[in-house]
Amino acid sequence: MLFFPLAITVPVAALAAGMEALWGYPQPLLDRIGHPVMWIGALIDRLEHALNRADLPEQTRRLLGFVALALIIAIPVTLTCLLLCVGYTLLPAPVMLLMQAAMASTLVAQRSLWTHVRAVATALRKQGLRGGRKAVSMIVGRDTSALDEAGIVRAALESLAENYSDGIVAPLFWTAVFGLPGAVFYKSVNTADSMIGHLNLRYGAFGMASAKLDDLINLPASRLAALCLMLAAPRQQWPHIWRTIKRDAPRHRSPNAGWPEAAMAAALNTLLAGPRSYGGKITQDPWIGSGTSGATVADLDRGLHLYRKACGILIAGLLCTALACMIAQ
Image (cartoon, rainbow, N blue to C red; front, side, top):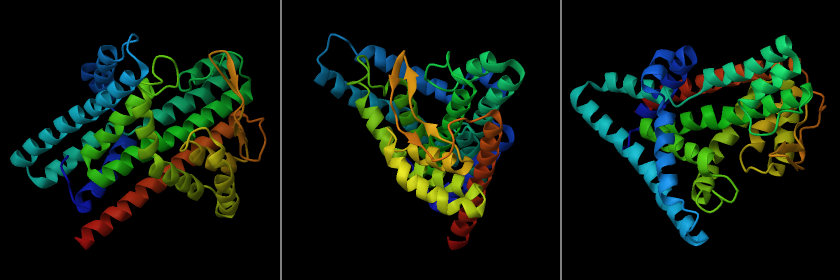
């Protein structure tokens, strides 16, 4: 991996966040070449089919899962570093800084997350429960066919909070630390976790390495995401939000998702998590927050507003840190 000073990596992260907030990932580019996450996903799919054989012992599949994860990280990161080496040989450093930022912006999902969650609110208003269930099924893995309005809204808010952490804060955090290679490293692990890091018969052994590493590298971002969501709320709510985070975040099944979800729940005075159905089976997860479980579409609107403010706070923080790093150089 190429190692850049913070005077380069933090400005790259700040520019990437701003670029993605303004433009997102252009649809013509998606239609023509796909998306970087799709390329990583194709690599993961090939490795999984080649190595995760059902006839192999569990210990062997677990070992091959480590091998697959090493390749999932090494191949995209190595190609990224080679591209940057060639680029810095041929182009001026300021141009390459902008190119790093533009490429890193493709691994951030501010606009797409906003679009998908807002679509749930729009569907609820225009099409009722049927439309809301269909829209929220696009962003969550739980059963949605029997959800009422409160269940749909809670599912959307949980997805908004969790994906704010691992779809926005985390890739920007690793970009700020290592530049574009850091963003590619993070997204490779995170995509592997989303595809093979499941506790079921097929992936339980093979995907263990991906799931564990994803938990580890999301630790700092989940805490930072909770902080940004807290700062986006009115100042008088901060003590209550912080108490809720400390009390409820450890109760979540994930070592990371509970942090932004607890911040979101406390800021909106609503309950999140709780019992839900996956594949026809009810999981009795504890509630997070101390408000009402009867969330409405108006609460989803407030959650989206909080999310936009948290994104703005994150970008402002990156810009200030970038300026400080450049001055200190």
